[in-house]
Image (cartoon, rainbow, N blue to C red; front, side, top):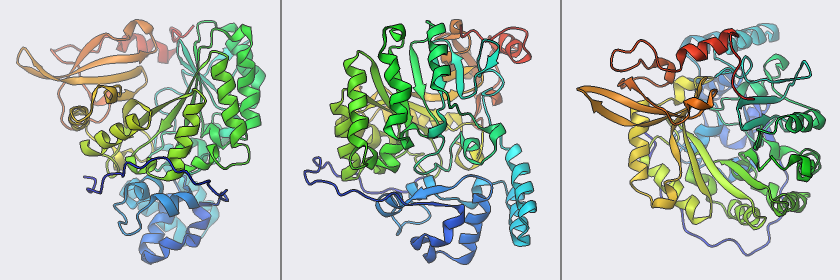
Amino acid sequence: MTSVMPLPEQRAFAEEPFEPRRFLVYTERHLDKIAPLKKLTDQQRFEMRVVASVLPFRVNQYVIDELIDWHNIPADPVFQLTFPQRGMLAEADFERMAEALRSEDKATIQAVASDIRAGLNPHPAGQQLLNVPQMNAQTLDGIQHKYRETILFFPSQGQVCHSYCSFCFRWAQFIGDKELRFSAKEADHLHDYLKQHKNISDLLITGGDPMVMKTQHLVNYLEPLMQPQFDHIQTIRIGTKSLTFWPQRYVTDEDADDLLELLSRLTRAGKHVALMAHFNHWREMDTDIAREAIRRIRETGAVIRTQAPLLRHINDDARIWATMWREQVRLGLVPYYLFVERDTGAKQYFEVPLARAWDIYREAMQQVSGLGRTARGPSMSAGPGKVEIQGVSEINGEKVFVLRFIQARNPEWVQRPFFAQYDENATWLDQLKPAFGEEKFFFEDEYQAMLSGEISPRVV
């Protein structure tokens, strides 16, 4: 259970100018240089090294100085969000890597890390098998097309983040293995694919974090979309954690004004520009510069929509979600999704049973006004699609989960309700069984046919 902490102050936006700040980042190689960690024991620091040798670690000085309460370690939610914890690896894997580190043999360390990573489901939900499209008989690296109206684009310059989240489901992007990494260097491939697929209305620029890129790279990708041949692209989404990890991107970075001008040009051209901001805790919005960044983005006409997974050790408390959603509405943000932690990486450390996730979501919703009830969830981004838990009910004497697809590989599945046996321990879709004596869920045969290649996913 996340510890109780004081609620955020409702401050006005800062009026004093902000001084530019140097971006200073630390990775696994620099753990010993992070001053506050010197207060920890040698054993605690060694445990961090063990986990960081498997799962990617990166944090910057702004996060260290402004977001973490170092008097509340290790319970502080942003510390849990960014720093390695022993429980993030299974005990057997932890001991294997600890032994490898003690050997100080680089080849052994790399071999053990690779072996452990292979067992952590590095690309969940069919990302490499089903989502990568082709054009002119060529596989398009760096593009995913899972749902008919929406494509994801991974620009090569944006495949890193200002800091890494310890729960990240895209952790495989950051470990230096090209076989596990999505990225694209060619803007022309993106634009050509969009021209050929008029059914696509939404483009999601993702990563990593696109906001680590210089503005000129974003201009190269996005400015052409204002031309008439891209009128079918109605929405440009940018997935980012920068409002938490580096709000200076919109305020004091040398090309911050250029970035805001690009967003303004896109909105003036009639595009719906949405920053898909990842906020895991209300503390992330509780700095003056974060609030100033929010104000400046909103002035461009762009909308900030917020989303996050429900995470043990960080936000598994309805009060945290209710406080976060109320604060987001107050700041002009739109709550969008509460996700279930994905079945990858350090899931065993962060995952919450679906039954409890529903209880937390429902209790949080009861504490906010209608404008805060725009957040959908709890939602699982599973292989067949985004599955939402709509509730727990009893039907003909059987206790069941009520489920539906928010998005699906076959659009005909969307909004169709279905039912699973109630299981208080299940944490993911593949652990659920159909209710009422059914052998399979209604979508399973078609989805298996997609996996086997018998039929194509219905995205075009």
